[in-house]
Image 1 (tube, rainbow, N blue to C red):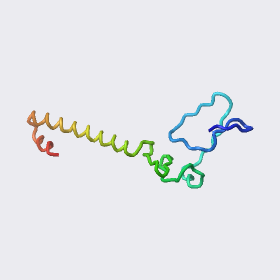
Image 2: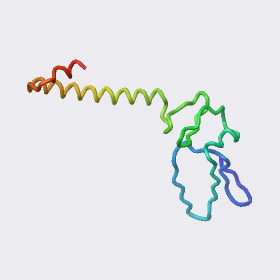
Image 3: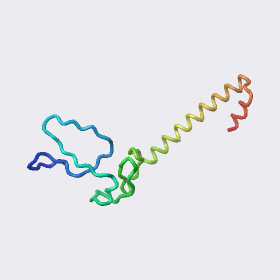
Length: 110
């Protein structure tokens, strides 16, 4: 959490999970940024599992995609998109069979 210091409020050393936009309405804010490759050299809140190329940190037992999605939810979303795509391809092939398009029946076998 935030703490008060002689210079003002401090949010302490932490990492955010997503991109941020920070707007200072009054006064000034000092940021100290560390390269994600330095995570191994810092006191983290858990056991480091992985640092994604975009800097997102995963801890043991809390693995996500680089953009924070739960891995099972991400796989389910990908499967849903593949299913929708396959259904569209099937519908198109069925229409082509009805229209007598050459080779359309072969696409139904895929």
